[in-house]
Length: 326
Length: 285
Image 1 (cartoon, rainbow over the protein chains, first blue to last red):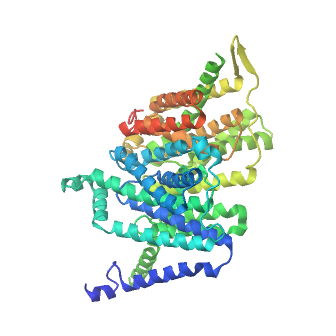
Image 2 (image 1 turned 60 degrees about the vertical axis):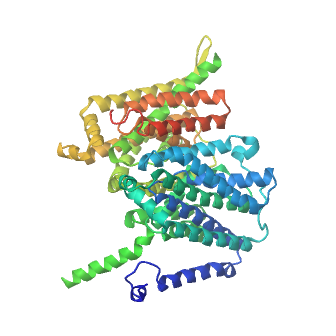
């Protein structure tokens, strides 16, 4: 490896500077519970971590050119499976959570198979309706899933200790992000990007488009299910409104506001849109306007998402400098 | 017999409302390539604004409806100029924008009026009876207005110059510019009409059933299904698909219990999309 390039600013790869920042962030995340005793903030942080997993996995699927607008429904599948397995079958959480993830991945793979024939916008719309259908299918058998009133009585993991649950979520997030990052930057990830750019060329090089598209969806749904199952054991109650079209749209927004082009995008977007409105909690009824304000700000000023902010600032300064030189 | 008449009446009313909202959505989608996720919210606020005009200002229900139409036509023009035109064709940005609009509007209504049970004052009262048939005049009126407006829109799109211009823009934007069509003006008009239609549908449904801040969500889902199944660029198709879907929506819950019916309904839509993703009537009008 060329040490010059690594030390300079000319690589976009893993430099020591970037690793230091990551390490610092991880340290901060670990120390966070010590900074605040407030159980409400712990709740906010736990939700943030869970949604980081969901939005990052959404982005992973979108690398392959498919926009899985049913993602929240898959989170719901993982959640409801974990919930039903623990309430109806009495299985412990450390069994139901992986089970929820695997089941969501299986359903994802099965439904991805017929959907693979659709491309771009049509895939997005079809998966949007698929998500709706799945939610109705979950809500329908009232005796098993609690219907519209929801599934209650799920045994909580660490019921009295939110801090412990926070660390569990942090571990899951770190592992998931590591897995998703390695997945994206592996040969498989490059293949997915090739399919997204031009499925014709990819096919002509011998890439099995169907296999890779199903794989992308399955991996994404695995993590969505994982997040959902963890959420089930945290919240102890499940309501279908957490997993419907509105929820999917919010996930899309977390990803878009952060920036869909970069791995850190969904993380930034989720943290911003989950945590910042809570800072303004004092405003009570006006909290949604804070979120809406962030959305409008981003859409009009930073359409590439917040991760493009450093780039925008740099180019703004460069533009000013250029004008001064003239 | 009672059941058949009731289901038929239900089907006609719901179909006409779905079609009105879907037509608005279709206009915006065909011409600007933007999926207006806020359309359900416009439908909802249309009902509330009519309520405001009728109950707080004390106008006659019909006058309130007209006032609402005026307000929403202007809102449609505003939307088109500042929200849709900058982002035409940009799907990502339009999602963020429309959800932003939805959040703002839904929360305004929810915070101001959420927990109260409200309904737009009835446009007509009374029940029509003929032998075994008894239907409320409200239902007949809703269907009648819906049908009339639908026919009007179809006439507009097929037989007027404006309609031809709209079709041209939907088919090929660049060529429409080359033909000398004032694309911005036609887009504004289309958006205004679309929002006005949604507002009318919301007001009629607000009189037929109660108003609630989230009634737009279900309606939007229906309208979206309609528009997608009908196909991009088709207006007449929206009507046909609307009648079919409205029929299914009215009949299925009678045969199966509520949520199963919805699940099967949406599953059917998904399966149709798998085989005909472009919809049935795409690219004609």
